Image 1 (tube, rainbow, N blue to C red):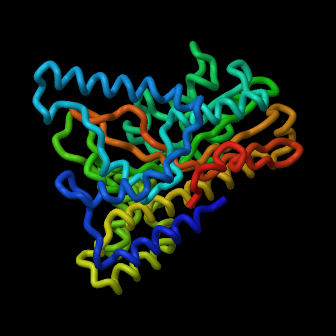
Image 2 (cartoon, rainbow, N blue to C red):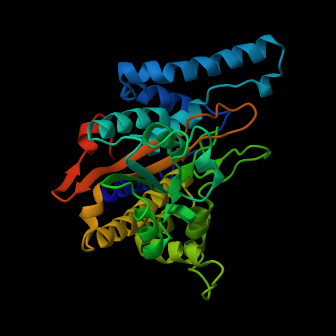
Image 3 (cartoon, rainbow, N blue to C red):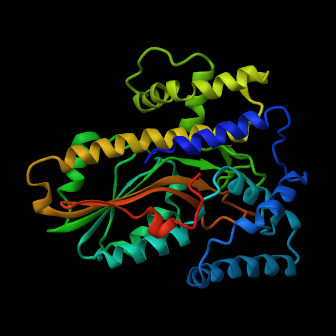
Length: 358
């Protein structure tokens, strides 16, 4: 399934707020007021999920109290971020913490016979280190779906989460599946949201200021606004692919920005970069499905593999480092389906039906 409706919705947000948008900051009440208005739409965590997630929240709270009690400077205390929460709910309203995604996915797949001894996990996320922290979604899935001691993750993705390994990479990956085993592939782009609620920025460990995330998507967007890319560069082919694929998808967005009188194309930077990210998902999803379809069409494929599951969506990174909540990032699921020799089973409604898809 493509996210054309999600992209369209974000484009509409951009158009409707072009003349009045204010990027939330730590000193503004804009994000806090918006958070209150959407609070009633956030009850998407079940009782069991709450029991799993609550200890993490409690630990963070205890750490905050402990730090303050020991006389730590306020700037070093871990504090919640209503601006981050507001931007998540505004631009990626169906996203939930990684721990919730892992619990739901693992429960569903285990019922379908996915066990550590028969399952291989592939990941097509961006190369960015922030997507592979100890509490990242891919690490959580690895711990829950494959062998605890020796089960690894086959990395299919490059910049932006595009599965740049191609036919050879997919061939190698699928040749590693246990006998009559099952395949799980996590994929999609990522986007940072800073502690101040700025989409496309995130705090990194050891850096004083937030940096661009995803840098490949943001860089491609800026190149397209500037008129496109230059001559082919064999040392930058992944970024050039992203620019070429994004160019036709962003024309409507850029035209709306132009008509709004934006300075340098940015009136509503948050909505613009959220729309860019949703278009990035369409690109990653198209390449992923084409690669998987090509593999499944080969003679004898189902003689060796019993089922393939695709879990696609958008990783929403939060800030990591001193004084920030860190821990669980968020994930907006947009695709969750299983394929076997009998056909395709769309599991999104069964597992994520209580979440907003747009």
